Length: 514
Ligand code: C2O
Ligand code: CU
Image (cartoon, rainbow, N blue to C red; front, side, top):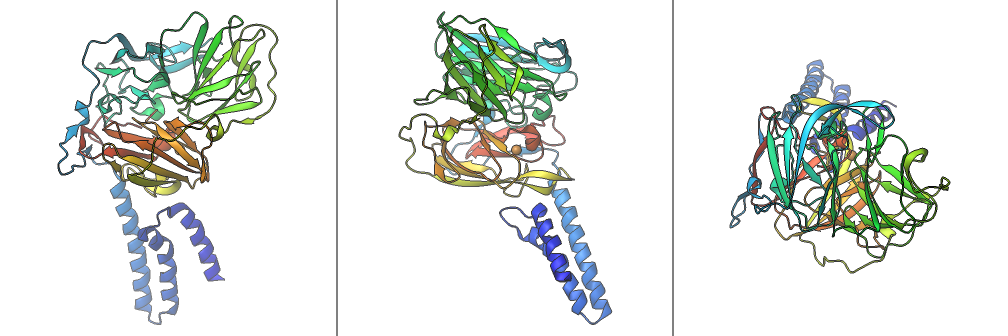
């Protein structure tokens, strides 16, 4: 009975301590005390029994203390790079956008402001240019975009990360990896070529779990060419503040817009929150024309019965022709707010089910016929030390940032990653600098349009297989976009061999990317 009781307790302990892959240390911590107890029971001499108890206690304590110390961030943790024979070293600081004259320039000034929302509610926010969301940056394919960031926040650093837009590494805006956080009073200028049309967003990547939620975000739209007069194109970030106040676009209550019948409408749904949101569209048939800034092949017509489950960080573009009656864009089943286009009776929102994006649209031959690198990432939740403090942390292969080994790639590698979620929460995994092609979910290959994503939501128990071409040298973050999960460990790097960073995170730096 004692043995059974011990095994039961050990089973529970394993749940919280032992991840995948299994490590000797974790197994010893769980089963060591059992072996010790057995020895104490069987050993005749009292001194021997005392010795076993003492050794076990000291070993457990030493393991714990060593793990705690080992988890403490050093003063400076840099990315001195993964040199390779024959590969000349390059610094991310030199991997910058083109230096020719910009065709579009913007200035975003980070500052604290009390913002009053359309309902009259006020929020104390961190803003770009005094507004939440920050100004929409709308450019045309082919533009050379220059954005000057100024920081007027008190005491808080800031950066601009172009979420989903695959910029050169030195423009990626990750504090401590691609630049130093811009201190109060400082500036930084970002430059990149708008070569990929689509819907993206920007946000600070310094203390991102606090900064994004408090308002340091906005929409980035690259249109393929100037809009004709018969088109309406609306960016609609879904955001949630700490207080629970929700913003859809710029409004915290139902927004009504007049759109004439017959006009082409494109809605750019963007989830800037930490969890998924469901959007449904009543009053018109529509198609999902793009996901994460990449057009879908042959999308079919959907109706109000379909819900679009937008993962944290993800974007869906929706297109339709404005009908005679009203169209209502509903978020999370609330008819009282959302966006009402046109006039007439409120359209019906019949209950329905989520669109399965892995089966939507028309297939096309895949671009990859080999894989040069294969990685597996097992996501879990385990007791680990985070910077010296024990926490029920979010782990990848049993480790937390910064101890998760980087995925080391060479330029032009075709990289396949299998992501397994062993936990009970979903993890919207976001890779910087690249779009990944979804190969399969739960072992079932995708049967719809090729699906290129920068943020894919791995639900509890799911296994996703994705692949990308390593065509953008740098040191890139790969992390859960439920940003509190990232802050609690779920961050790693995809590092190109031969690329180093002069920037660092750590206690003696001002950089705290999450
Ligand atoms: Cu939207 Cu690493 O970020
Ligand atoms: Cu997560």
